[in-house]
Length: 358
Image 1 (cartoon, one colour):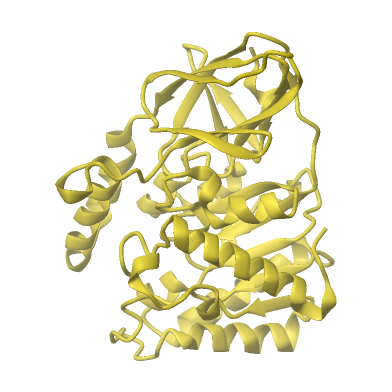
Image 2 (tube, rainbow, N blue to C red; image 1 turned 60 degrees about the horizontal axis):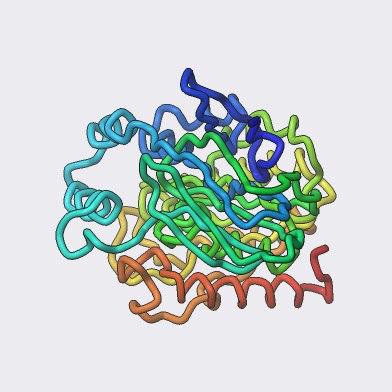
């Protein structure tokens, strides 16, 4: 069975020698742009935001899953980690792949939704996934299988004990950003803020979140080939720019170049720019000496002067400043945090000039 006909939220797919399909969220030009950074490149391997969505009058679904080679992806990342960041990197790897007190935490998953309701979540592993539900009258239901946010996987042999038809297309939104947009480490793909936003807007989503990413204009290369006009776009970078860039001038230059390219690509699409969320280390000194709020200030200045169809939303108000809302207690929201973020983000989008995204 060709899984491509059921896939939403991807730009391409490939099939290996054993018949497993993998789905890509990016154009080749985008992958080339992020390739020099091993972390960014590794994060593009996941199918974050991709769902298999179909209708069936059956009651039993099976799907084979086979994770990609983790060591092949992350060994280059380890080689690029700066000595000052090695401790944090080790903690992140434990959280991702087990070890220590977090070895039982679910940081990634494959979700099964029945008529929009989450029914089951499985850890990504090499196995046959099974999903069943009561359907004695053989009524037609919509099933959605949300693919992992972090770990790249191949999928094959989707079967149902009844009909199997692609679900209808919906309006599409484009979400650009870093690890928070990708969904790190929500655990349940259907519970990250991007999935919640798409559900609230009754839309499909192309999630181009990349862990560790910054405002990189070149990462928009190839987007002129996007096969749809987004109903709206969200952009959520800045926290890594603030953390990693050496100077304020570098941050501003990245933002200016990115907005200029985005304006060229989507001159009439509503763009909602989310300034950085609160983070527990936002008071710590960075090489440039500026607080985290400097990113929002630059975003406001650039959009007001040059990009009036872009709206800056204050990310610091989207999530209460409480460590218990963060999976890692400082940066990445947990499931409760993502729920709050999505609700407030939707309200903020709808409040802008009385406009409600369609």
